[in-house]
Length: 128
Image (cartoon, rainbow, N blue to C red; front, side):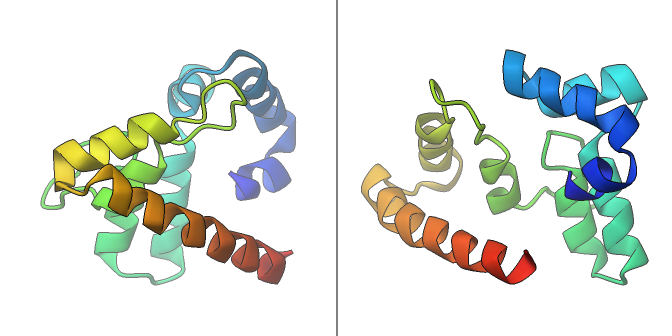
């Protein structure tokens, strides 16, 4: 998404703003307006950078696309459930899905989430 916002801002900014204002499935909005989504672009970038094919496939599949010969990686799909919405961040949905799909308890997820957010902040500081 940062790549699209930077390199295709004229086309992508209205999509991103709509998603922030109205909510919904960002990938579906992208496909509606552009005929492709950020997961497809990210997968292509991974391939261009020479990252392993299974990582590109997991990223490509994180919004539910079926990727032949690969199952989307659980963590990538689970994180895709989260939203930037003050009323509904998707956290409860992600925790429930993790319990169903991977058998991880709510307590364990809560113990993982807090340090995960801290590590994400550290990573963001390195990137910026």
